[in-house]
Amino acid sequence: MSEWDITTEEGWSDKLGKLLEEADTVGDAVADRKALSRRFVQFILRSRPNTEAIKALDVIANEARRSVLISAIDDRVAAISDRTAELVLLTKGIEETTANAEKAAQSIRLENAQGAVDGLAQSVKSIKALAASMKDADDEQVRTSLENALKTLINLKKKVQAVADAV
Image (cartoon, rainbow, N blue to C red; front, side):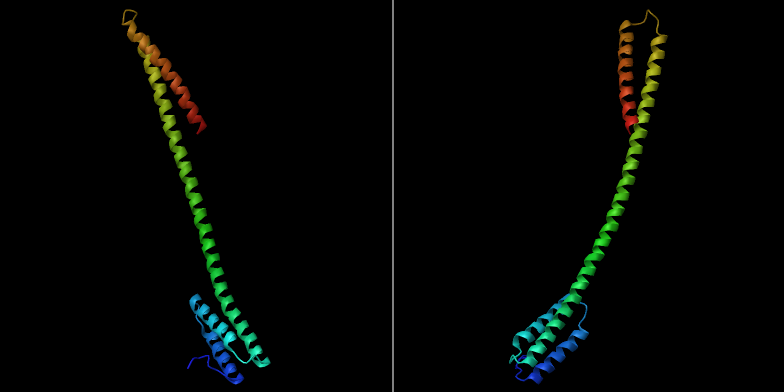
């Protein structure tokens, strides 16, 4: 015999009473709530004959079904809202970490660029000092190479300094 083999209004009223008791004790699990909602739908589909009393029971069953599902939906909405808040917090953390990393990288680039500018400036001074200390009798080819190197280093120093200033 099926749980739905009911023939009297009193039997249908008792069945609805049992379903409502289950609704009072249903757990928080969405699957349990959906299963109970389906049982209320089965009640509405199977309850016979369609007298005014049965139709009134069907209205109560439908309202109970909606209440059970709304609770499940509310739980899901709350869970989604919680995940959204977690995402916002995580995103803020990532943005802060990214900003700190960018500041650190910028500082490192500036430090490296400034170190290169200082090294180039020292090289320019050293080449100028070497060129000034050479006598006219020294190798002309060496002096020309030093002058070319000096020009190249001065141009490179200007470009690196521009990079350092941009950082």
